[in-house]
Image 1 (cartoon, rainbow over the protein chains, first blue to last red):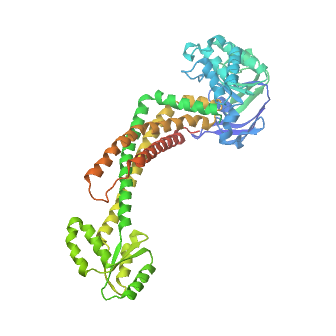
Image 2 (cartoon, chains in turn purple, orange):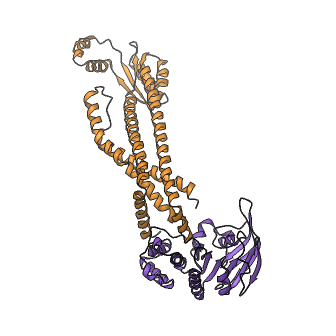
Image 3 (spheres, one colour):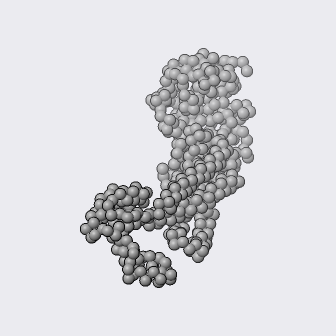
Length: 228
Length: 297
């Protein structure tokens, strides 16, 4: 469960990204975060995996109070949260297999578990036959699926995606969304910041719209609600 | 940390050495140059120290007793000297002993002095040593004022000059070594800094998937330590080969008996160990500095 209480965020340069956000997201929900550029979507998702700290207010992730979380405990929080970016963030010199295994090496998994888990998630994202390719040999959609595989390989309770389809064509975007849906069906919370009207309106989920740093709308089975 | 993970850090640290190619060469080169100079200074300082100590230990105060003193006077004088603060040992040396020493010291020419054995004109003497050689002058001053002391001899100027010289030499040597070490640390931390920047993407991803700070730091420590250890190879080779020649040259060509270098075994080996340790410390310190500054984790 994710809980934000009266969260404000002002950056060092004086820009206020969020001003008084209250929200509760239950385990297993699928949530779109929408809104105009610069409205605070990215800040919203970054707060959840503690890439940013709120200026005031409190954030709870499964009863952990992030404002009281010690600096050195952050890695352990992140092991329970998978993150997917618009630009994939894969290591260019490593193979697909190695890129995904990396996330498990970091948490000191045994080599056997690593092998099993990586093959499992490659199956989930449908890239078993690309295990030995390097990222440059893959299409954008495939690269994004590798980064999703990496995000879910250590079975996080929450997956956060910041514009995961931003660099992909519409058809590939639908593929990626289906992958997220199947992850969500396994009980993982999915929070996706997106600009894609097509996706939001086609796959109806809860929609949180952020405008000028506050939550303007919060609807179950919501619409995108902006002109593109 | 699991052992397997530790091996992983060593593997990554080593492969970074090769990955960073010329930067590694520059860094190792800087350490090599530094350590050669450090080794030379250390060898000089340690030998100088040893010589100074030998000379210091030889400093003694010769207290000449005047001819009018009877046996009782001599005994009481000996007691008084012993009671002076800082005096270590007091030996009585009769005029015959003194003559023998004189004759010995003269070598072959000493034979002529043997004539004096019949009617020895020399004084009886007390040979006094200070616990701390630096106190020699102070003690000599106090002895001078005692009864039945004719003269006090202790090579005042030589001793003072020597103390001054060794003190300056040590200070200058230590300052130079520290300056060199800091230069090398700075150069290594620069190399590691560039490594970190080049790998910032990888580090970002590691953080993203929940790597602890130590997991990220370890390979950099290993890399820095390797820079230091690799940099100590040439200096150690130079020590092990070069010190032989130094030892021979000094033994054959310098004839003052107090000039004697520390023996090759164990000194050259000890110095080598010290150099490799300094190299490793420089390397680790350099990486610690840049990690703290540039990793921001």
